[in-house]
Length: 227
Image: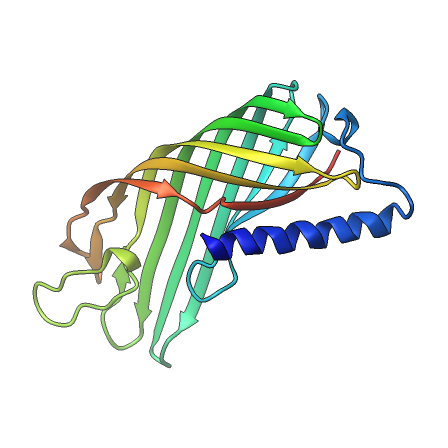
């Protein structure tokens, strides 16, 4: 928590310096002119500071559209694709995406500061396969079975998932049209893992899990006004 606080302070000071350079001699205004207006489109990048080995673990790209000063539809998207030639004989393919359409209801509007509650739908899918020239080819996972009754890892298996996210957040808007913010929420997701076939034959039937977690992928947000 201390690291997160220090990170936020350093970032706030850095952005404030950029604003000051952009508007030399003009103090940063705290009136309502700094906040978005009806019809504005905002684009932001989200992430989680100090999670894992990186300073900022990427969360999602997100667009927000102000249909009014209270109601803001939004859409978050994450995507990942990798095609690896692990050996001269084996290639693995992994493609995944998550789409998070939702809406914010803004609660507090004081100068450059805004707070909100939000509800998102979560829809995600992963496609996984392994291609081999001399060995078994797999659809539904990037693993090759080693022996009978092999248990494929969920972390390397295809899936379809659907769920929802309830969160609260806040923004601070600068006169240079940039803003920073934070958000935290609770997600509930049902994940349905793919059947795994080996050389076209069913090897392992798909399974399902239900997961409720504290959602921190959007803990830190930085964005700008697009339109």
